[in-house]
Length: 93
Image (cartoon, rainbow, N blue to C red; front, side, top):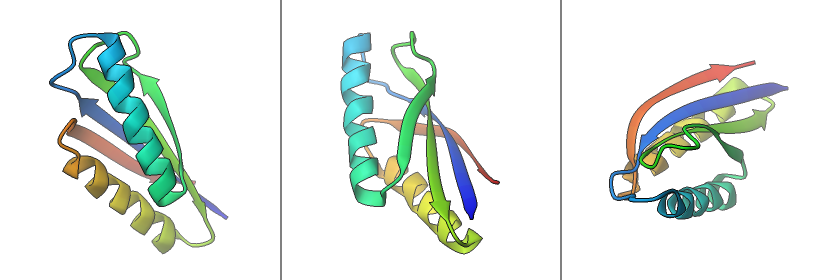
């Protein structure tokens, strides 16, 4: 069994409060969970209005499948107009 971990740094340009940030992140996390059957959580930047770091985890029997899923997650986040993808890091365990 292989665990794929994706760390994503986001910039949320149109947020003027933590409430707006939470709304955007909650919506994004729900869409990711429903579409890709993955686990998602916010891991850093809790008190910053326009910055966030999320962690995405998937479990698979082979590396190609985990890599494919996480690559699709990156593309999905990058296509979301509410956020800007600043950086991401993939790792497998």
